[in-house]
Image (cartoon, rainbow, N blue to C red; front, side, top):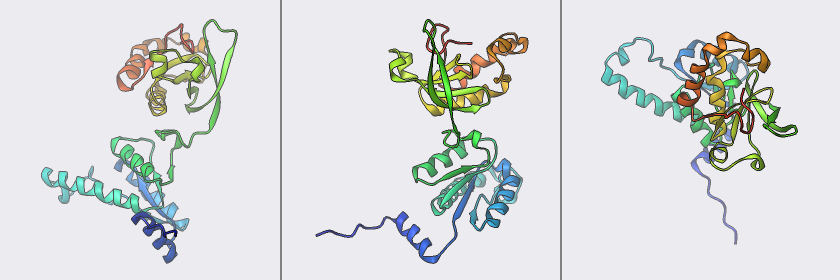
Length: 253
């Protein structure tokens, strides 16, 4: 004899909202530096017929509620827990702003763990690249007769991120770091252990130059030469990446 499957608290909540005929509930997340943008997003979502929950305190602004450091620390903890409750309540999440700090990243991870759909006002900052459209990528291998084609994403204009096919991976660093950051020409820049690491690497070096230019134009750019030390520092010290060797898969610029 079959037994009815017991509903989890989450499914009870979904069923209750459906039974009440509630509109879609959207939880707005992001750095409080974007409070003005959150207000605009609140307006747009409300006008579209959705219920909005969002941060209600901007602790970057002075206020008696958090003027005392001890009170501020306790309040921050309670606000973080309150916002997680808002994410649990919501049907979907909207990330506002063009920057993701540790707190916002934690909110994204929490929403993903709950299976909540996530939207971005700036899809290019999505740490998982889920909103990025697929693009064709070329792998230029030194000593080969041609390029290999794979599908990846372009998180920064002119820079591509993709996973190296298993048959092109070598033992050691190549196998442990199969995700590649390359120039759109197919020339390699760095290797990473995960897709998220590679996307972060692209964003770390995005402002160093106009990556849509050709390799010849980049090599002739004296200003880029001056930034090579900074490029190396950003890849090696701000990310989990490794610089691409000139004789490896995806020949380096």
